[in-house]
Image 1 (tube, helix red, strand yellow):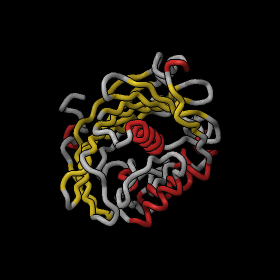
Image 2 (cartoon, rainbow, N blue to C red):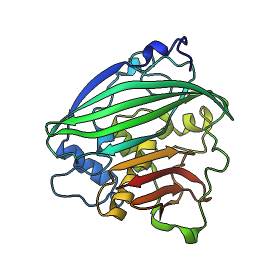
Image 3 (tube, rainbow, N blue to C red):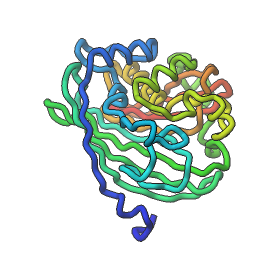
Image 4 (tube, rainbow, N blue to C red):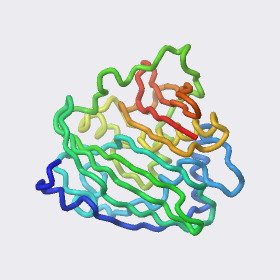
Length: 281
């Protein structure tokens, strides 16, 4: 996006949010994602718990029609109404410890406009650091995409079909229901209506049903990689490809992808990939 656009001045904006790696909140996280989380050492938080920390606490008066906080405070006032996670990347430097204080520093790193099959898209890249008393624990890039009202997100050609089953290993089934979506929305203080309001999800945003959260899918994949590698990966990059509809059955799959690397992905009942990731140690 050219530097003379209305959003150029938003690049470089920063904010800092504080929280605690609460043992009680972590217990609720483990109960919510029971069966999907990898074992961890006593006193360590499970991989992906950091996405539950320091959620934005906007009052009802500050929410937009979709349930997200109104744009124009920290995030730029993008004119497109639909917001989704597009993907991101993690560097896991040290595990979070239960009971320790954390500070999450966020900077708007880039804003770009593209044209997809459904029209104009605006991508916002957030660069984050999770700091603890022991030092930097997590470095993250989180990509948000805004899109228009034409239709629900469509998969890109050639990106959603898995390789033949014999070339991959099924790690587990993936059957997210409405209870899982409700509990994860509560953990993350996420009021995006596509996760709990069926009439809105189908009638306004055009989805096939309630949509499984992007960070929930990323958490499942991160823990699958941790289990496969017997420890958390040092790097983890993920990309959303298509919505996964709650109440349907899919699977988590993996295959080796070079030395000390693993490709992991979630596919739905049709064999379509909804999120894929690459882990490295």
